[in-house]
Length: 423
Image (spheres, rainbow, N blue to C red):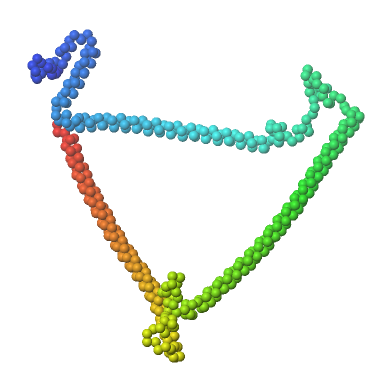
């Protein structure tokens, strides 16, 4: 004997935090007349009880649905997918089979039509002439020659009530009309011949005039070209003559300038040679102020020399010559000393310039050497910086790889622990 245990569910009581178990359908007695509504309410209550039980169970709440349920759902979905794939394959195979059948039917129809056409062509070639074929009248070359005007008096071809036309075959042409027609035809032909002759003559006259104008234009062009060429030659000759005249003028100017320069140089030489300074005709030159000019002073005059203390009164001949010689030598020595000072000054300036230039070159070479050394040092520092940066990047990459591998292992262990289900 089986005893039906009533289905219970938890319900709140009057005491706080205390729940009691009551039958799940205890409050549905008044719905006995509507079993469908009562069944729907019971179904919702059972689903709510199942959800609460899952929430109250920590293992199911953390681990999720049991693996058996998931496997069952996956098997149901896979079976549905397999059935759908089998159905699609069946429909695809059916479509391919129908396509093959239709292609075979169409090929049979085309073959049959081609055979029927070939049989018709063979029969026509074997048993029919071209005049007996149905399409011969469409391409008969003698159709116009065989055409006969309708005759209302022909009993074989009665025209009926529509024969109220006047055909050319009803009345025969007379000799006069025939002659008149021939004359008109000859007149037309003569007019056409004359028109053709006139047109030919007009074309010949037009061509003749065109040729004459072309010859005239060619002659005019030749005359213009000859005139232009002659003008160019004349202009070139005038240019050459002008160039020759200018060259002659320049040559004369250069010659005159050279003669003037030579005359000036000769005059300068004569002036220098005949100057008082070179001839030493003046012992000491006095300026406008009455004072002696230091640059022009050479020696004592003869009167000053005679007035000098200790002078005996006169110079012997050879003593006078010796005195003049000594005076000239002293003047030459003063001049040579002056030019030697000039040469020494120039040589000293040249040496200073050369030494300054050499110092600049040595300074530039030292600066270039310092720059090259700095560039080499900076290049080495840059290479070391790039090497250290690459090494640092490689260390970062290795560390990232190690951390990624450790994270993958940790995630794998955590996933295993999460999906682990022990009922």
